[in-house]
Amino acid sequence: MPKAIHIQVLNGPNLNLLGMRQPEYYGHDTLADIEANCTALAQTAGARIGFLQSNHEGALIDAIHEARGVSEAIVINPGAYSHSSVGILDALNAFEGLVLECHISNIHQRESFRHHSFISQRADGVIAGFGIQGYELCVLRAMAVLGARVDA
Image (cartoon, rainbow, N blue to C red; front, side, top):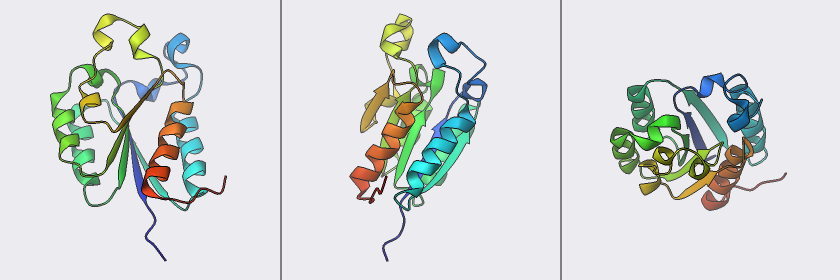
C-alpha cells in the first residue's frame, strides 16, 4: 500500500482572528472551520494533513523546515508576511515539495503594498479571493498533483 501523502497547512499572523476580524475581507468563518473542511477533504483521499497558525515569523520558518522530509506539500497563507518576509521565502526555497499560496481576500484589489508577494516567487500555484474555499482548492490541487485518489 502506498504511503499516504502529507499536506502541511500554515497560517500567518492574525489568521487566528478569522470570524472576528474584518469580515468584509475575510468573512465570518473561523480557522477551525477551515481546518475541519480541509481535514474532511484530505480524508476522502486517505491523505494526512497538519495545521499550524503563528503570529511569529520564526515559528513559521521552523514549521517549513520541519516539513522537509515529512510533507509532500505546503499550503501557506502567510498573511502580512506575504509582502515582507524574505525569510519565509528562503525557507520555502529549501522545501522540495509542492508549495501552494492561499489568500482569503483578493490581495490585488486591496492596498497597493499587498499587491506583491515574496512567497509567490516560490509558489507552484496561488489562490486569492475565493474566501475560505481557497484552502480547499489548494488541498484538492495538492492531492491531484501528488496523485492522491479523491472519492468525494
